[in-house]
Image (tube, rainbow, N blue to C red):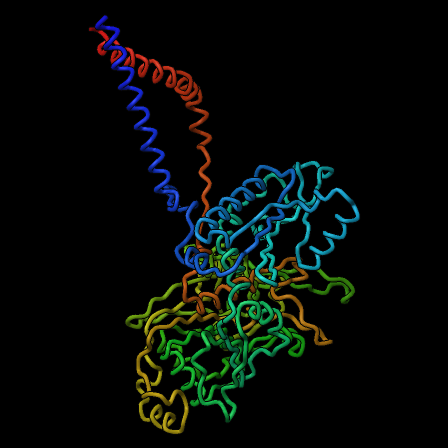
Length: 578
């Protein structure tokens, strides 16, 4: 009888404990339902979004409707990309609330063929294009089409962007196409598109003119892309009416000047930098042009270009050298043979393929190779308080010719081409980022600075500044990096396209990243440096220890089960022994 009463008491106690535990869990869930948090234990924080992105999402005032077109019967890698996208959008919803809504839609799921064709036509007009993918890497008959794009609708505006990185996922896609880089860039691409479609007050950037810089046709492609994110203007420093660079301009771009800067123009730029302005310098310090080979009967002398800015750049912490890079890793040109009736492709070492990027910096991470043309090296000089970051270097087989230097067409002939031993200047810097409080280039020219200031040049709301408030500069030894080809009829072509190589190089992406970094005040571009690492098993160790791990996987769960069963029965027997 006593044992039965004790059993009932224990049962009631167990039921009360269970109800109390359930009640506590329910209360905790109710209290925490208004809060969102997660713990990301991955080294690269692949499941976390950055603080600038969180701020951007929380500041949204209206609904962002996001549609993912990557859908249908996908290969495992494409499914991974789709899943990573939806997981990120779920995170976006946690910070933006109802202001972020999304769905996944397959255009090929529309049953009526006419309606489907009409819808796909509308997508193509928006730049949302289908791409080929093969379900089998060897069977060409397995080719299908998908739409790896995302569209964002905000109020009356719509914007679309591709989900795949063309550099690491070339077309046609196949089961082996690795989406890791595309996944890494998802957050950056989303934030860039959201900012573009929602930002009513675009920052200002300006191209400097007055010294023979690249014209609007040669800048057509890069300017068109910049117009999507910025208000783009032009400032002629040598115009009599130009006395300063407006402070609202975040970044100025000096794109391949051909003639000297006046002292007034240099002073205007210097004081702009002192006030926190940023500069992208794209400079050719040597006069070298491929067309000169035709007028010079197959050769010409590359000489210094007098620009009157090198002393200024030196004060800021870098020097663009008067030399020309030769790199074994280069693009090709067509060389005539058989009396000019036929052509063969030959390497042209004066046009290096630059892909030795700084992989840790958001400007240069995940960027495709760049095509250079008569590139010069960039050296850094120690300046207190200035941080220097090398963004891009030549390959391990490169060298440079110091101007004046003879450029000869016969270098395409293997008899005259440099040998590997002669490529003895590897990994030469060609693009450098400088950050900090720059000293004025006119600090040692106080009488000149004061005279120009009294004449009305630079900002008149204060004194001549000798030290900057903090800004950024990027110096690149290639003025053609952002120049697109213009045909004889004046029609601009795509930036970075090379018809001989049949490839589109990453010139525009790199240039856009430079400008975005210089203009970025919120740190959003830092999301470009995000990395998703795959950690495959060591195949050799797996093979050596295969039997061992199979036994562990079979026996370990049983041992754990027996252990907990033994503990349970031991405790139970002690409790009810009486």
